[in-house]
Length: 372
Image 1 (cartoon, rainbow, N blue to C red):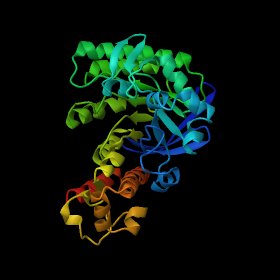
Image 2 (spheres, helix red, strand yellow):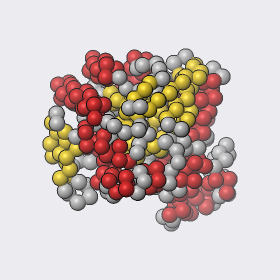
Image 3 (spheres, rainbow, N blue to C red):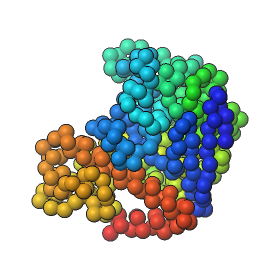
Image 4 (cartoon, rainbow, N blue to C red):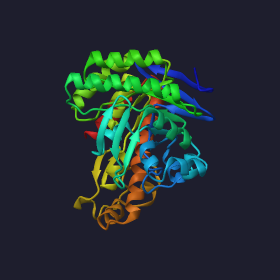
């Protein structure tokens, strides 16, 4: 248990299966069972889905992006309207990313130094100055339950000197975030260091010294091979504090999630299930379904025989194919409902397998179906 800014953050490991953990994370009045997947509601909305529909898929935590909400509609307006929970009518916990990754990915960067970041607004081109203190102020206005520090993310490959510079800047910013934050949520540190083992360890040692209730692994899925990512995770996750939640940012596929759970990861987010759904790429217990293929035009069967989501229990695969081909808005909703339900069901199965010490068998059986 950690105490931060007057808020008690409880993380209780209920069961282990080798390195994997099943735990309960308590924030304010919310309890979240881990391992957990957090859908991305970047702008305060998961595209095409209502809060009630998200709950029906099994969603317990949402992720939003502080930088995007700062730009539009504005964090001060959201505060005036009761905070992000009230604004989007979501009763569960919300994690807000600081925007460090977006500084890296949007292509609008003007300058970055130890004081902060200058970038152009992707909306109107106006100058935005983002500092650790501004990021904390924005997330405080939003009323986030989990607040992410501002970090400096670099792509892979990046030379060691530049990676070290970004990592050291991230440590400096993490300290300033902790010194400034006065909200009611919990601040998580973000580990950087690219693919360099010594830089990763330096980042971890420094963030442990600052003392965060949770630790996120950043700077992955930014150009490195999947094999390299997993090689790093295999050893690095074991070095993270055992009494704190471990959050792998921006990853990934169902198989990535299962492997990372085996290493000891507790929390995930990724745009993959909803973005892929909007592009007709669906995850099922039998493998990937590309709904736009002509094969599904007249298939009078449910999308996934093992799924009990609203989509699978009410509509044929042929109908979903028709909606997607016609670019109907309903296709986005129904396909996103299925993909999110699949992700949450996958992790629910992993939680149960950890509790019964059968995770390895669960993963083997699950992956075997995908490869049939």
